[in-house]
Length: 306
Image 1 (spheres, rainbow, N blue to C red):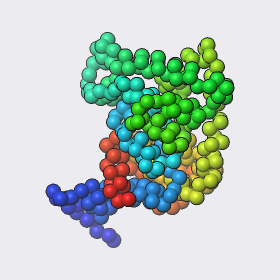
Image 2 (cartoon, helix red, strand yellow):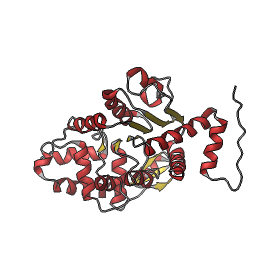
Image 3 (cartoon, rainbow, N blue to C red):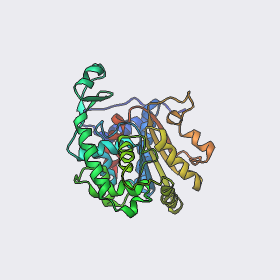
């Protein structure tokens, strides 16, 4: 039997040293996190087509720059996001922001003050009002012929084309030619504004149109990797597409959800093997924890090693 190594960290240790110590210990969450760093490094260095799944309030929680930089540095070839992260990226691009709050604040008082709460993050109603005005203008600026049958990835590209903020995820993805899929986009403030725009203007969103682009990426890839921050629809969209090629070759997920309820968000990646959505190899790691806390550390470690 291999003995558990006792972790040693001193004032001269850096993030690479810490991950190496985690790997040497090799147990509980430490071992999973170290393995996840190794797998992401292999994805990037090995030329995998990497699909990044974004669930939860990642932009609102401060991960916007990290995600945009991954796209900019060719470490991610496709993004699948919930609608909320796209909305919050645009709010930042339009000059709005996200603010430090607390879980214990009185929500009725916040509502009266024009503030919304996402855990311990606050948003301003006025920023959403700006978003509503600006997004209507952006939608109107898209060629009507395209709006007659526009896919979600085409829509996000068109929005990114019109964003004037170099830190924006949408703008960076547009400039790098990285598609942003959002199969549940209508379940967001962006979806609501699109519906309102549609009342008096041409806008027909074709979510099935994205499947052609997504399936082409899957079929043409020599190797595919999935990185899932949270679970839900982004995770399943990526896994389901990779079913077409016999499953993801490499996969890492960070989740706070539990498996007992049977929902995909809490399912360990091993469950995907039974469906053919992930290949039966050791190149998968499920990390239980807060993605907003752990993912920046993992990317820091990967960047130090590549």
